Image (cartoon, rainbow, N blue to C red; front, top):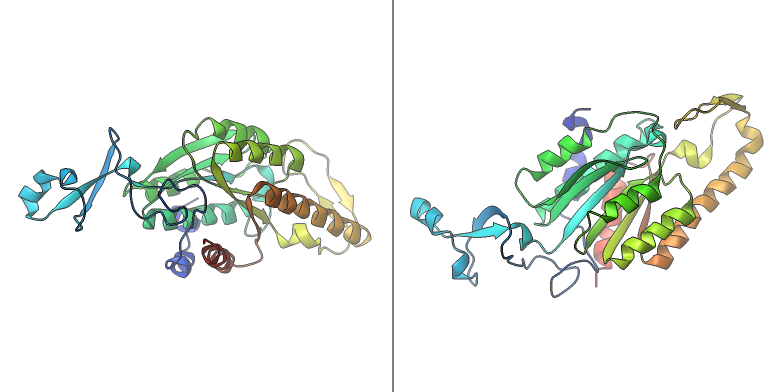
Length: 297
């Protein structure tokens, strides 16, 4: 899949004036306002930025001054107050739909990471199915977004089963500091086990945003006539049903499924957002970020 497909310029344009606000995870003096950068010690050099009045003189790069006759400050990896890791579920069920839930999730991850890097924070991505498949740690470098797009493009259609709790447990090992954890998944797994892992992640000071990606077909079951359904994960037999006969019961079960996650997230302080692929990504994300920004106080 080409990077041009993974990011949509219209989406980036729609959200360019918004922020991904951290309410709890920022290391700065005021949670949610994480633009006063911390200067790290013994950390990896990242890039320069122009000197601003009030900056410490000890951080001026005098070699750059000798070449340009302008003052520049060295920035380090720890300069950012917020480290965000975006988890993207690419298990078999995520490849359902047109566009697929997987593509929707990849585009969402690309947009969020772009926004976070633009506002001066660190961003990384992790692709998973039954376990972690690809992991790119959060960074705040100029080339990071290109690296994120490249990592996202490594996702391929397949029939791998999902095991969200196991994947989250593996990710736990990478979370050495408090930060923002953004999970993008259809959550087709046992809600009890998934929510238990979210509880564990919250205990290590991770602020969690959960995007629950579902297609209109999964929510409404709009099909007519007799339909053959095929499993997308593992070896499963074909199932022939008449959707009309089971539509009411099906919709009720899907509603209960969604509400189990919504209520469980509310109880754990996890920010839950249903992402219906039938709704334009730009509209969903813009409304979500505006709502989040409005409640940052």
